[in-house]
Every structure is written in C-alpha cells, then in structure tokens.
Length: 191
Image (cartoon, rainbow, N blue to C red; front, side):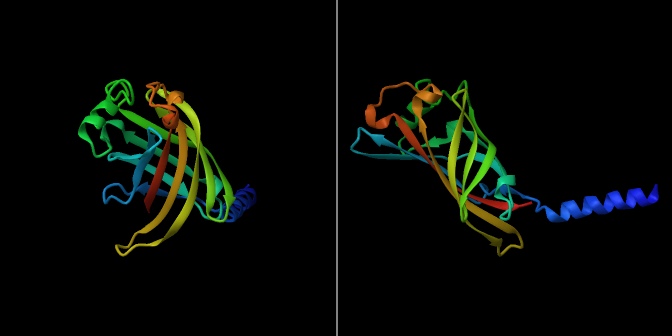
C-alpha cells in the first residue's frame, strides 16, 4: 500500500511539473495603470472618445500556455466620462447605459486562443445594459517583469467592436454610429 501511495504521489508531481500554472493578477486601477476607453463616430465627421473611470478585475496568465488564462472585469457604468457633463448624464440614462437599472457591466472570459507571438483572441461573455452576448477581444501582451516596488506585473492591450443594438441601445445616432470600439489597456500585479 505504501509503495502504491508513493508511486501515485510521484506520478502526480511529475504531471504537475510538466504543466505550467497560470499566475493570478489583480488589475491595477488603484494607481491608474489600466483603462477602459471607447470611441464612436460623431455623425461620420469625427470621433467621440470616452472612458469608464471606475472598474476592477483580475486575470490569470502563463506565457507558456496562454490558453489556460482567464479574465474577469466589472465596470461601474455610471463612471462613464466623455469630458462633457450633459452628454455623460444622457449616456447614463435609459436610452443608453440605463445605469439606474444596470449599474455594472461585466466581462468574463470563456476561452483564450493564441493567434501569434504575444497575441491572442479572448472570447467571453459581456453583460451590458442587462444583456449578455459573446464578444471577442483581440489582445496583445505588452510586457511582463519585476517592478521597482518588489512586485511582478504583466500588461496587455486589447480591442473589440460592439454593435449598440446588440445590447439594447437603439437610439438612432446615424449609420456611422451603429457600433462602438472598446480600447483596453490593462496592467496587472501578480498576487
């Protein structure tokens, strides 16, 4: 019996040693090293840019096995900021983000597929305005390593395009403004 137990422990250790384990990171929003930005066409003449000031999240990452990673983010939709108070008030209303009924938006990954050196497609479920839809974020590793404070960090950028009507936003903004591009920049601190 003792020999079987030792053999099982040895096999388990060998299997674990052969697998890289993803490290867990917390997105560094405290020191403002992460951004959830967006842009949308204004009448087809220019871009309107905005950001969500308040959000939190985490991810797991292993450079040797990026497919083993996970991402989870929660956004305070009332924190939308386009540098125009009246427009932001309108965006928080029921024609757009409906923050009274849906104060948060969430993204949780369901799969990560490597697409090249330091690039991947992150598929996940985005819940916005009370509607959940699958989205794909094109992501790129910007770098990882030790920081000056004794921690270890990893940073990514990503983007995806959302059709507004997929998330119940049906206000007619013209044909040039049927979709919005999300532009993400994330730096995480390893836990």
